[in-house]
Image 1: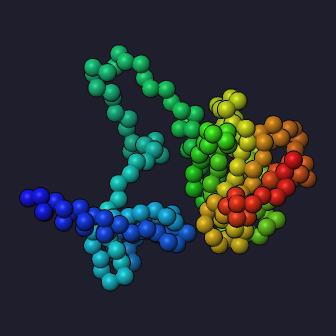
Image 2: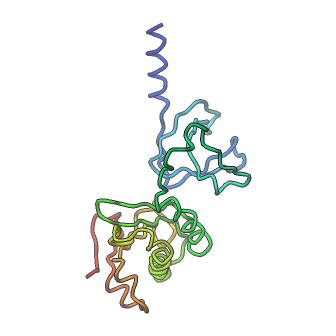
Image 3: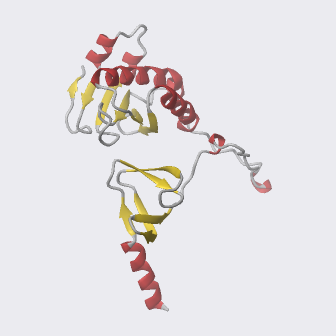
Length: 213
């Protein structure tokens, strides 16, 4: 019995594959209906193969209120008297920011907090829009996202960072960064020149930066 378990464990290890493309579709069958996307670096567990198509195992979580037909479950009877777990501001902010990005600026890839650096990170993918339009979107996203959720984070966030792919539509999300302090974003009005003078930019995923105060 022990030898059988060892063989199974080896198969699991050798069955792990990593996504090399910046983003890859996954489908319900070879050349079938698109179900979603996988980001670069994601590891998948291979369970079958058909020519160049790999079937893989997937498991994850999705925000229930975003699903049609979702009904929130009642807590178990014995737990109803317990204090409910506090909702994190990010949980409430995520659907609103996702809707804003998808409707006006690109494809939403995530909203994250870097607690150590006190940064709110907004991630998205853009098409071939050119450098000038990318800069305009970076500024608009920072201002609108912070206006939308800033009060929920009190003084825990120092700056907002927009992370995207390159302005020609190529590359991985996170290759191009723009970061600005929230006290600048709260200025009314905030002109494009003032924003650009107070913002730092990186075109190599944060290895080097230019601009900023």
